[in-house]
Image (cartoon, rainbow, N blue to C red):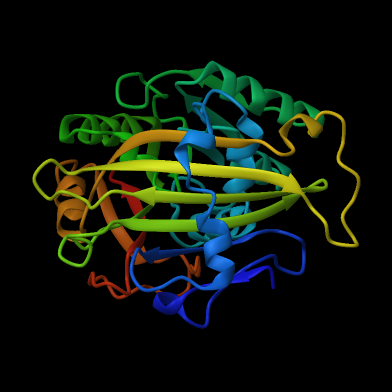
Length: 329
């Protein structure tokens, strides 16, 4: 165990699992911090950080932070396709990822034999993704585009997915609805769209926002990340999000040497700021209902168990949504 939660989340851990992958937690910014949590919190001193756009610069850091649940997410996508997809009897499937970023899920699904495609507004991220697929002897169709404006296909895909709150980068209702329409157009009848995101409880977070804390290990580096969100506003439906990242050497006895290509990150601190749109459950369902071509089939949470539907009621203990939608004939 590399760290543990403070009073608000007693009993949960922030550390690494048996495979060396990082473990993260989401919590309200309440209660006193433990010694280990204070160590992570000390990262958040803006004057000591380099500002960067983590979707266009230092993409390895973005990739490391969000790698933790990749295997679970890919398994959920495949499980949903096996259970619900009627556009193809069985895999491999044609799978589209709007907002594909660094392509971690494209790689995971391509390794399982699926035909993958991704759309992203960052040319840098697409190049990162292309190189990653090539290094593994795999290919994918990549498109530079805005997922709220540009067509992503015409009835070409069996499954589309948008995980880890990427849907919340669409800052207006018009953008969100247009995106859903574009995805519906890209899916074959009976195909699926899987959306994963954090929801909000406006009352619970009225005075203080959320934070996520992550610690990840990769190739001799220890990467601490703290993601802080402002209190969500039910009127503007915006939250300001700041990510603080500190990169250190992994001092554990089993740590490998740091490769030359990664040594440039050691001892550096980074800061990134962006906005996201907020949704409570009612708001999310209202947006989905605006596009009748996509119908909600099942509701899950970030346990990523396709066989267990979550209680579709939102409270301070249920702040994640993993939705399976189906393209209507």
